[in-house]
Image (cartoon, rainbow, N blue to C red):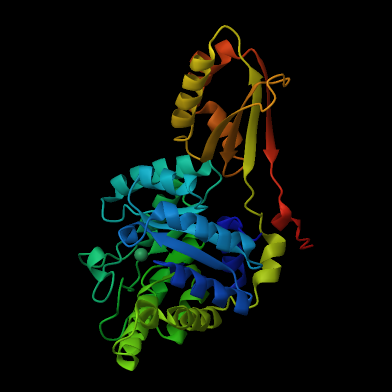
Length: 400
Ligand SMILES: [Zn+2]
């Protein structure tokens, strides 16, 4: 399995002078094309899901496919929420399997951006999940996605960036230095000096949004200036659209699958081109040796009850599944009854945490404290509780 800690991934890239592509996907063809390129190139990759695209696919349905692609892959993969709207979006994304989140309050005033970002950072770090913040504003000019980012460019300043990172605790910072969301109009002009000053002041991995349309040389200079993550979508969407138009011309009466044929390949080719320019090709083995694998924890409780009916037990389990599954970092809350009625412990909770950090934050979470103290513990005096870090077949790869 090669789902890895995104913080380890991006700090490695930052230290070693390359950038990891964060490719927004909107369908299974995108997912397959991106992963095929990463595996062909032995490159780390970030599978990115933008909240503004959630109208194009069902986030909850696509996440198991994204996670399966990451876990079965031999290259290091992280799964990222791109442009999350608020704290609730970030919690939902983490509980569905994202192990990096971006909160975008860059359209707000600086104090409000700091306040909102800080809340997300506190929650996410308690789940072991790193956070990307954005300071300054990257507008959209034209092309797919441009309209989602209205307004004028606001450049990131060094002083604001220093204060923002200190006060929010973000792990990575998206900066505005002249790129735009969507397609460029004319020759993009990037403020390289500003980028280098920010990098010098912060010494954390920087992120560029609006990578489409930059030249190879511009990308190389960005990476030399501290950019370790490049968000990339519009060029992939354009390549897919061109492929569909070509298919329609070649087969005017073609079926749906005739029209979508080859999307995966054109996306894969463009992703590979980027990985070559950005220097992430061939980095998978050294990165895997240095990254912490992203390994869930199973929190298991087996128990017997006293003084309540079977009906009360069912009601308590239903309430627990509802209340506890909303806690940040909780993937799943399952309840069970022993198959053999004479089993030593009649009931169980199986709570899946995204990361070992959740063991503590879950225990202290007010919703858990209230449920455990007033509902569960009073009726379940006889119980055993153990946290297991889970290994399965795919974890057995020896990479040392
Ligand atoms: Zn963006």
